[in-house]
Length: 224
Image (cartoon, one colour):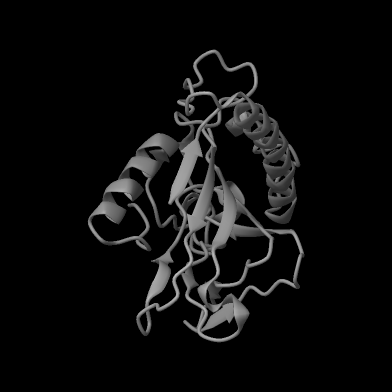
């Protein structure tokens, strides 16, 4: 079960009009405030990314002026008798630049990240701990010529302990840059032979291709 909304950048007259549930004024205020804070955090993380890639610190700023980032609340209902090997969310990568995932509460376990060798590691939190997990997305992988790769992840059912059948909740913020932004290989990410793995594409086209690939059953395939 999920609810997601795109509010858009502050001051962007072309931002989409969110569709809220009826009589949800308090929810709208809380979600909008959280969205604004996560937009600011994402801009700061992109500045860290720029420095790590050998770019000017503000290199990504122009790509966030009309961003279409999305906030999504995800509810995993309790399941007292899950089938053997049943997943709560199948293996996938995220579409955009990166995802800021908020975990916490009484039952936050179950998220697993895939290492480059294909093995899985658990994202474990202490009881009552509240934290952010940052997953790189397919857009950033494409942008960096696969110098950085997106993070395959999944959510598994716990098979032991008190949290086996617990309800699980998380809040994801998907950082999506301006839809008309041209995504071409970042200059510092061209390989030693001067090669670029992917042709230029707009961010909007990339997201649409990822959507259709997921609908076709390829949730971990990069758009080309």
